[in-house]
Image (cartoon, rainbow, N blue to C red; front, side, top):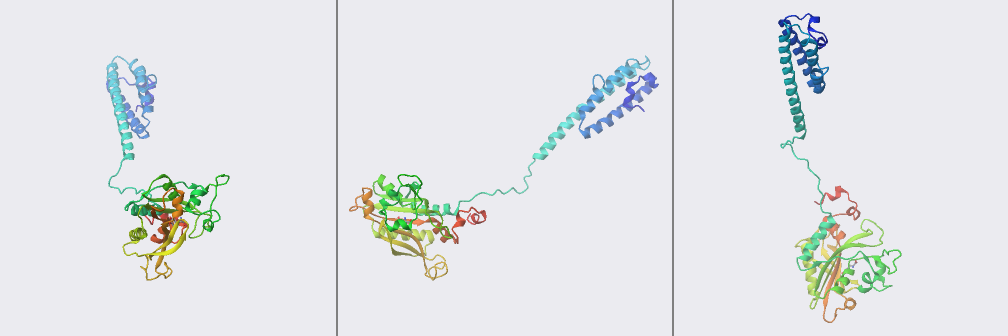
Amino acid sequence: MATTDSTKQTLAQMGVDSPTKVASLFDDLRSAFDRDVAHEISSLDLEAARVKWLGRKAGILAEIGDNWLKPAAKEIKPAVGQSLNALKAHVEGQFTALAAAKDTAREQSAAARDQIDLSLPGVERAIGTRHLIRQTYEELERIFLSIGFRVVEGPEIETPYYNFEALNIPEHHPARDNMDTFYIEGSKAGHLLRTHTSPMQIRTMEKEKPPVRIIVPGKVYRRDNPDSTHGYMFHQIEGLAVDTDITFCDFKGTVEYFVREFLGPKAKTRLRPSYFPFTEPSAEVDATCHVCGGSGCRVCKFSGWIELFGAGMVNPAVYGCVNYDPEKLSGFAFGMGVDRLAMMKYGVGELPVLTQNDVRFLRQFP
Ligand code: DAH
């Protein structure tokens, strides 16, 4: 049987001396080729097979031309020529077809890799939610914007003038001791981290003529010892309304409206006398406990009431600092701890969880 090595010899050396023997020799070669490419296609090394069969110098077909055809005896030369052409056509045709098949296979496997099965359930991406403090701010802002207040913001680094003096808290006033303050090291002007959002009352009235109706969301800082209800930083929202004819009734009505909006229509409000240097009279605003409705429970320490925030009528002394005429103007102010309100409303027991960024906590408030 002819092997691919036989092309090194001449036909005479192999004893091939008739057209029939030529035909059978070429048949064998063709089978050898088919086996060859069948093997190569699976190892996907078609190029090696191509060189082996069609290589210009050492390729099998070139050798056949040199060793079989050229020296062939006259009687068999035409048969050798024809068979060689036929084999050549077969080999070339096969290579073309195999190359095409190989391309298709490559495309198909790439397509299979990229294929999207639309019937599979999608990958659920975890998306963030607004932080509970942010949500509470938005709720507070919604309520006050609905009755004509406007949001303003101000600096977290303040001067003692805005944080204290202009709010009627002179040096050595005991109210300064209640707000242990962070001072900025090296500041000649005595800059500090604001201890409340109230300085924006002054900054706004300095710039704007009455009527003024603002709320001021923002961070405030105190040198408290951190514990389950205190931190170095917390959030406040300040409120101020000043106009020519604002009465204590307006103050009370606004506060009651706020409490009902924030805690629900059944919530009742109580004003308790209090003291702040920048309001006169001052009040502590309480609401009926949102857990027991006022009958008394552990949350309200069995009093039926929850303390919400501080407020009062603007102290005339404050108007003096901003060139407002205390004879003609009146108004009210309030200052709320947003963290406290959020903890109370959503039943959060500990302040630190609000800043620890634990997703197990955050996910509870989608
Ligand atoms: N600034 C006060 C504090 O941080 C809160 C406050 C009380 C603000 C009464 C006010 C107010 O505007 O009228 O403790």
